Length: 230
Ligand SMILES: *Cc1c(COP(=O)(O)O)cnc(C)c1O
Image (cartoon, rainbow, N blue to C red):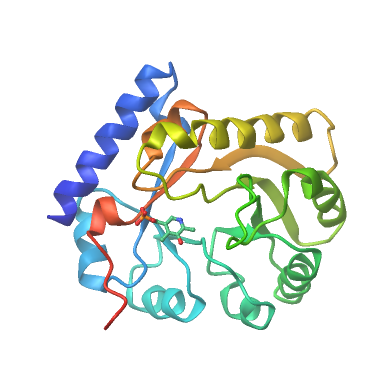
């Protein structure tokens, strides 16, 4: 089931790329495996998945230990500063940096471990009260502050779009994130890349790809509904 779902989502990413005149290689499909067992991750691996997204540090570390070391792990959920030390060196990319204090902690730990960490700035494009992320208006300032820190590299932007019935409703959100990335890229800030756009989840990833996503984060569409009661 999981392998079949993964192939289906992959195909839809491919089709969205074709509609937008984009190369399939521009888009990374992140299989969001939070709350799901290692056995299901292995099923996805059998279908070709090798990039997995988790939103909890402990769960990511547990799975990291149990699975082959050639997989790629992304931390996509809110990150507390006191947990940063556990993931530096394990994750390829932290999608959810939205404050200077968090970035400083990542920088400090990366320097201590003599490594470099790639991050995205999480932008609350839709300005939803309940969401983490910096506002569009404050993003460039935060990027400039983080850019000068050692051991940390901004690769682009991430957003969590609102929950909507019709994915078309999120098209303006994705467009706004893309525009923000283009605007910041034009400033040519040292140590800042704006090539990664992490946007689109199960309900709207095809629209996100059409609007320029380079990473889509798909959980339910691959692994099925999550059960938080267990
Ligand atoms: C859970 C989660 C996803 C995946 O959501 P689905 O709707 O199940 O695809 C994507 N991004 C983030 C940040 C998440 O926490």
